[in-house]
Length: 634
Image (cartoon, rainbow, N blue to C red):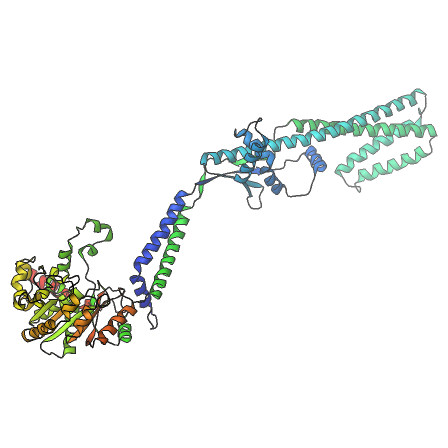
């Protein structure tokens, strides 16, 4: 990683440089999320709401008194809804089990239904929401509604049970009071038949009993300070005093009559309650009512929007993390300052990326672009000839200008273009520099001295035989092997293409020739030195293309024989250690390294202002457009 202080643009540069890491991570995580979501079994939920309402009559109060227990009614109802008896009944109603089913199967189905049903209280109300969750929407609706029906039936049956218990209790009490009343009436009848108690005492007793019942009636409506209540109390007090003076027979009669009256009142009250209990036992009204039935089920899992959103965020974050991790472990050199500080040689030029035809269209349309053959694609990369006013051509001219300053304009300079590893663009760089020099009026010889995998001849549409190796083995003379503009026109390039931009008439090309079994020996031979000396007398500049430094020693041997060496480096292609070793090998061979060229640079790969190379183009385009408009108006 660079050792300078990171700025916002540095982070943006890393993101753009590692954009495919981010994109692939994003697509991988999001694709995995989508696949996982699609493989999940959809879960649906249906819900229904019920209201639990206590209707309390006199008999109901008695039921509550007899069956009272601590606890929250709503919480109790919620647990009852999910209980095993309710789930057993639901399973039977839904046809999931039969009476003849084994107990293990009934328990298993009831347990699964318990897990599928949940109950929630709506705030502090007496409303419960019953939710059924299954993998089938219709099953969820049916389960929710059937659970409610089973609970209503259970609740109704429990209320009938309570009412039946109260009725039996009252019935037992009524039987006992009826027996006591009959016994008291029989005793009163026997007492009167003996002729006892037929006097004033009987009348006083009857009057006392009437006053007592009247007092009870008044106390239900008035307080004890009411005038009528006070008057009756005073009269009863007077009658009580008179009865105390009565004989023993009279007192016995009064007691028997009082017992008859009390049992009779209690009997009438119990008989009334018994009728109410019978009515309550027979009534069809329950305490549970349905508010909303389940008519539809909603998808609760998987939540596709949430899953896709989370997957996208995680994919983006993972992509950014991997991008910065990749950048941190990248051993290549990434900036102009770092290259110069690391290799101790100047950066002679920065060559922007030359986009192919497929790169200039959106990626979703690239499959429609016809792929050209390799030779055609290579020739199109000779950008200085095809598009001399482009930003890339300006970069090559800037590179040539910097090389001229280092050579101080000496005639007969021989320059070697090398790279540390293959596919770093040295051949295209040397070809474009040769065309740029030729366009400046220099007499240039371009030598294809890569005797391993020569490519230079394809760029100019030439055949590689005869060439350099044929000269070195004395098979023919140099002038017979060197190609000129005429040979280029007779090759794969058409005349109008060659003459499109002036300057190629100053360029001569010497191809590699037949590939020898011993290229290193040929390049280090005395014949090669003599040939270089001969070229110096006939050309202003001789440019050599060579094999990569690290795989083979051809470039190192040739570097010791030329006046200057230009290293070509594509950022990210070779590690910094490999770049350093290439320079060390050249230094050991006493080669004069002029500097290094950073090739095929995209905007995201260098710490440069995005508009660094584009001012020329914008200025030129505006100027040409303005001229075109003026001509059009004229």
